[in-house]
Amino acid sequence: MAQDSTSPVKTTKALDDYVLLGRSGLRVSPLCLGAMTFGESWGLGATKEESKKVFDLYYEKGGNFFDTSCNYNFGDSERFLGDYVSDKRSDVSLVENLDESLKRLNMSYVDILYVHIFEYRTPIEEMMRSLDDVVRSGKVLYVAASDIPSWAFTRGNTIAELRGWSPFIGLQARYNLLDRTSEFDLQPACAELGAGIIPWGIIADGFLTGKYTKESTIDVKSGYRNQAIAGHFKHEQNWKILDEVVAISKEINRSPVQVSLNWIQQKPGVTSPLIGARTVSQLEENLKSLEFKLTPEQMKRLDDVSQPTGREVPFPYSMTDSFDVFIGKNMQVPNKFASIVNTYNYGRLF
View 1 (cartoon, rainbow, N blue to C red):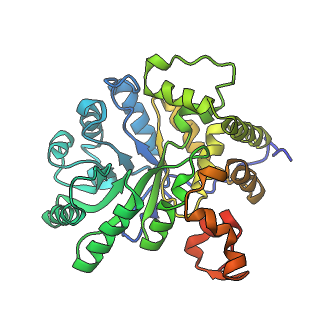
View 2: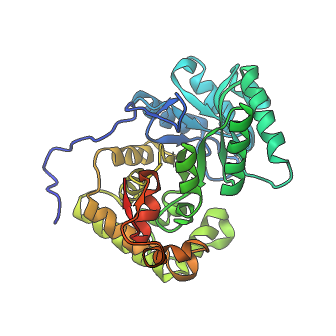
């Protein structure tokens, strides 16, 4: 049933409806603003002036959670963001690398330091000890991880717990309607460890904006994003997912971007989806995803059409749908593992 477009919109969340990240005491906005688009060196972003407009709108709405890196646009992202927050430091949370980043940002500390990509060379105990050292130095309040295997994330936090070091309080991971692989290992790991999830890539490189059709022409030589979108074109299931997103967006008078964002906001363990915007209008569209809540029926439609099947389900999760037969029906499962229970229709939550 279509929603009456003239009925008043009840805002369910706002950027200043702060949430705690994992088991920490860090209060952050329900949407995190990614600053990879601050700067034009990579060909994906905006000028300093346009980026400032995006920052100002997010900040004026109560936003306090920003994500940057020493690599983004060869340091321009940090330099721009440092200028923007220079007189607002006590009001915002930042995510970045450290010493050189602190210089570019003109700050003495950051709230969260991310280990950005696990590279399989540094021993995990050495990594966790080093992270604890920077927390004790006062340059960092909390540590988190991005793009890391669940076994490394879990081992890191287990070592930290046993030795009294600072654990990871959050995890950034690719997570969207086209790619739900995080639900198999990373999401349950975060549930067990009490870590918050900050998903990125929510609109699948732009595929879920609804602006593409099967007849669209993509220049794969023009950059990474176009190459990624062209890859999404190859799978018929992705078009079925997009059709459902577009159908729901028309029913409720919302954009496909807002539907995709709202879906991810309701997934277990998600704290603050990471959004990116080159323009003020893009940011405004993203923020409107906080103004409504998809119904359980709409969530189920999206869950069903995007459900990983067959070879997409890795072992041992490919056995989970047989648990009722081998272990017993209606087994009680802790609520923190809702993603497993709901995915495989196994047991009941308590």
